[in-house]
Length: 119
Picture (spheres, one colour):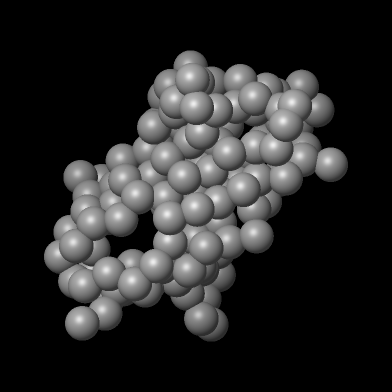
């Protein structure tokens, strides 16, 4: 069973920055996933895509988040990171790491990390 370990959530003031990281448990490397990404879910809302990155490094963001959020892959550290800047209160939510298996297509989820943007 694949585990996705997330880190980096917390409380930040509006306008601030935060970096989230996600690492698959050994022995899986990020190269074994076709796509990895981040979703977020605010209370009472559905889980929505925040950013995703493919094995080839292609990225995808909702238009509303482009320019503020950046997703990246680090093969050396076996992590996928989400750099968030100019954060707004509406960015508050639980952020989930997601990975799609490269060969079987299975989708895996992390346990989620809370991000709260508040003064």
